[in-house]
Length: 344
Image (cartoon, rainbow, N blue to C red):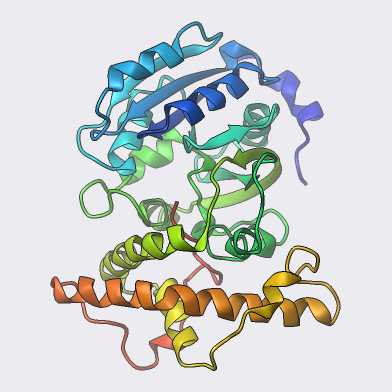
């Protein structure tokens, strides 16, 4: 049964959760995030906030001004080495609570986000259960066909979640909470080999060995305040390629999702992408026309990004990474049975 906040909130008087936010170079967005936390329907003493400045942050002390005069307990720390992995590890290890909520520094929590995470953990108190919240584009952004395409298993993969079981491959630390005990069992994020990119999926896979299950709470909503375009993603997929290559080297039992996605795109007929002009009006599941429109969109954008991804994939190989997937591996899928989603 799906828990509801109305039935669970009265049980949360002594519950508490620590919000951990790694940050680098986004003070304006961070301030807006904290302003949203000021207006949560959860009581201020129900949560604490730990903001962790990346080791590359030039003036971490400047963040202190943003943190002043908040109604909840807040502290600012610094990561020991560059990367979100190190920053998040510092945060959760300093937490005073048994629940840890990870947020990115460019999301805007809706008013019930914290209470929704708390309610679901109250209903599912076992250490093995985590909660995935929903991330959607911020209302103020101009959402393009490309951004809608990113929602279909590229940056996130929410549309393909059926019911509440999200699967380990959708552990998106833009909006996800876990028990501190699970983090202690796994020792947290891998800081050295996966400082940023695939670090959340690596942790989720290691937590899975301890029985981790991830439940999807559609009502724990955050808005993603980040305009995306194709040029930006041409750079991003290069980093994804390097991270994915490292990830599958560490976990050879997992198929390289993005490698197959982009490698399959280069061998087909060149797409014109005319479906882009209908993508904002026709959803993927619209009868008859939807699949045709979105097949055009999908092929067009995969072909546009594939050269950049594959070039970085091969460059990673030349640096001494494990060789590419062998024959027959293209038919394999990740052990979650779904897209692992894109690292943020």
